[in-house]
Image (cartoon, rainbow, N blue to C red; front, side, top):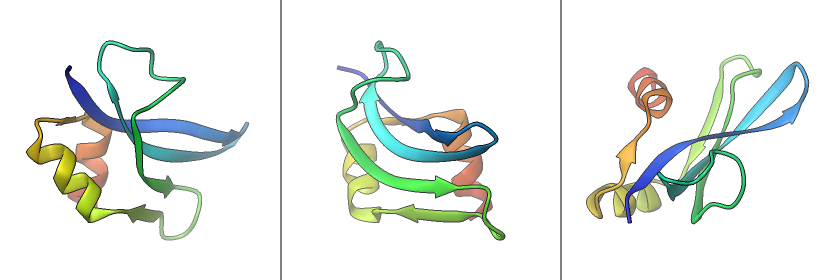
Length: 77
């Protein structure tokens, strides 16, 4: 099973918040996910990133691939 770590959008119109999740790459980006790793709120100043480093390391060591958006967010922090 190929797993990717990506952002899943939540929140209301005009005020997005995101969950950082591990999910099967072949499934739709909305819906069920394997595990929640953290949250990201770009509307706060500065943007708020809450992430569980242990879970992120666990998934990346097991072969999970970071999405392009996740790479950009982690690179900025």
